[in-house]
Length: 109
Image 1: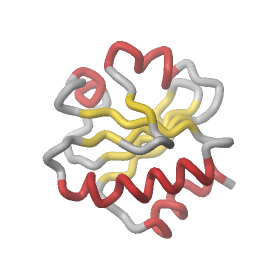
Image 2 (image 1 turned 90 degrees about the horizontal axis):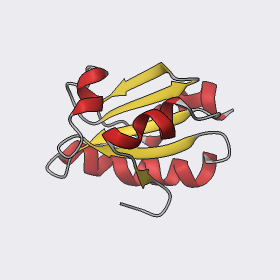
Image 3 (image 1 turned 120 degrees about the vertical axis):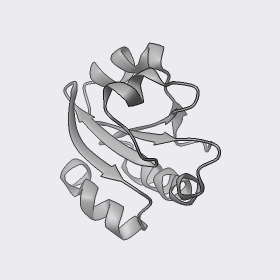
Image 4 (image 1 turned 180 degrees about the horizontal axis):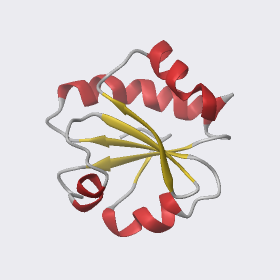
């Protein structure tokens, strides 16, 4: 895990994500997931560039099964953006940086 993205747990999710005053991107991932490892450095980069507008967090689905289940995260990586406690965007699967930027433009521009 890089320096730009902190981990969030089931126990902290409500406080850290849903009650945040700015949009929060959560990367649902697992150690064994190849595509997760592909997208991780891209998200680290985006976190470095856009952390003023978006909070970037990671959640290990193996260690935190409750939240992914609550949000019906069935495939990983899944990147969810929460705004004012609501799921505003869900991106499933590894994507190149340009595609992620396009998907996240509403939150980063």
